[in-house]
Length: 251
Ligand code: 13P
Image (cartoon, rainbow, N blue to C red; front, side, top):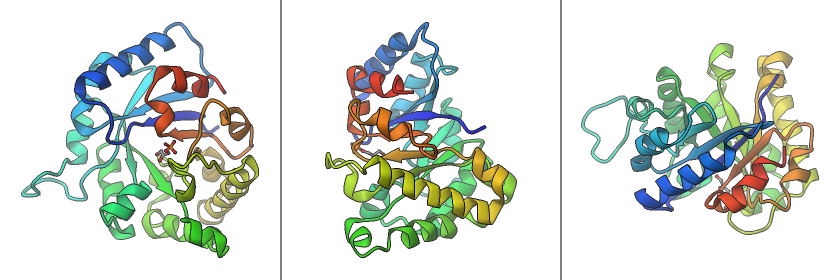
């Protein structure tokens, strides 16, 4: 069966020392606890190796927040999937709305990134989600479906079964305005139905679909209690152990 996952996305926060400190505190807080979910932290590139070294990676998976759409070579400033994997990271967040919006990542670019991540044995945490106008004009289902189709539906069933999805309505990210549990469940069920149609029930049932967007200690339990919500991708509330632990323990 699919896994429950609580993943933090630190975004562009914490210098190296602060990041190592946070990772160590989380590692300490998780010691001796039996959890009902996998825990992941998504750190800036430069933190990956140190964080992977500082934590028990059997308990805390480490994720990059991006990787290059090219394998290697003259791409100044880029970081390849192979480099990410060589740090000990096992995951990579791809297609985050901030990267789509601010860095012009297209579905085609994301398709390449997903392929390279898989080639290097990284699990993509692939983000999808509509902006406010799309929801208000009732295009949200269509938008999310086309984001999935355009970047992921050429994958073989075997490769697709390695993907984790994260539904992050853009209007809920960093706004304090969470999707209601009903809105989250409705979209997650729709996503799963879309996966059933393409890859069949078994693969769809085994795909973890996380919710992201102003998730916090106060709303996590209700969000996670929905049958198709398999965890969360947490931004702001992943930046301190006090706020992140109760979300992990909401499972
Ligand atoms: P917030 O939890 O800060 O709204 O961010 C969500 C997010 O974008 C995680 O990737």
